Image (cartoon, rainbow, N blue to C red):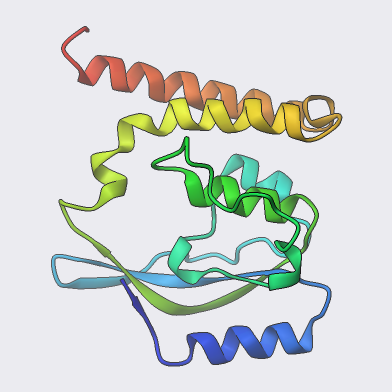
Length: 172
C-alpha cells in the first residue's frame, strides 16, 4: 500500500487546527489489476463516530493517524487474539472516547491482490467481530444498553457471515 505525498502534511495540519479530534482518517484509492478507483464516493462521518463505526468500518488502516495522547493510557495497542480485525478493535477503543476528523480527499492507495491477508483470513471476520462485541461488553459500562440497536445489527451481520463461512466450507 502507498501513501500519497500530501498525506502526512494534511493530517498533521488538521491535528494542529483541531485540538478536539484524536483520530483522523482519509479517503483512499483502491488499485486492482492496474485500475485505480476512489473508494468512498460519499462523505464519511466525523465527530463522535463510535456508533456509526459499529455498523461499518469506514477507516482503512493505511489512512489513519491517531493523536498520541489518546492512546498513552492503553495497556495494549493491538489485541493478540485478533488476526484480521485487530486494527478495527484498536480504532474502536480510541473512538469510544474521542472525536474523529475525516479528509475526503484520497491520500493513500490500497492495493488489492490475491495474496492479501484480509482476503486469506476473511473467514475469521464473524468470529473476531463477536469477540470484539463481547470484549466491549466487558470493557465499557452500559455498552450493551447504550448500543442495543447497533449490537443487534452487528449480531445479525455476524450470523450472516458465519453462515457464509459454513456454506463455503465442506460442511454445507
